[in-house]
Image (cartoon, rainbow, N blue to C red; front, side, top):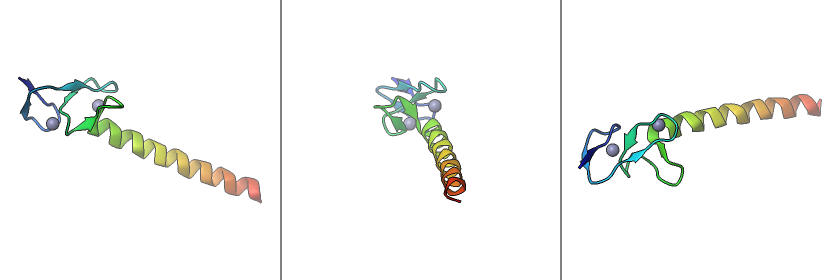
Amino acid sequence: MATCDICGREVKEVFTCRECGKHFCEDDGNLAEMLCVECMDRLIEKQEEADIIDDLQDMEQEE
Ligand SMILES: [Zn+2]
Ligand SMILES: [Zn+2]
């Protein structure tokens, strides 16, 4: 048995996040990306910020 660092449950199998190295169960991360939910949230926020910056740059170029 292993313990999920995100939800604290004992599960049969945990996976290691490639960003923070935490162990997460299949419910608490993206197995395809090997990211825990915490890092997924952080990366999505970063991506949204990058999109906003792109939008601003696009607007400046249009004028
Ligand atoms: Zn979990
Ligand atoms: Zn993580």
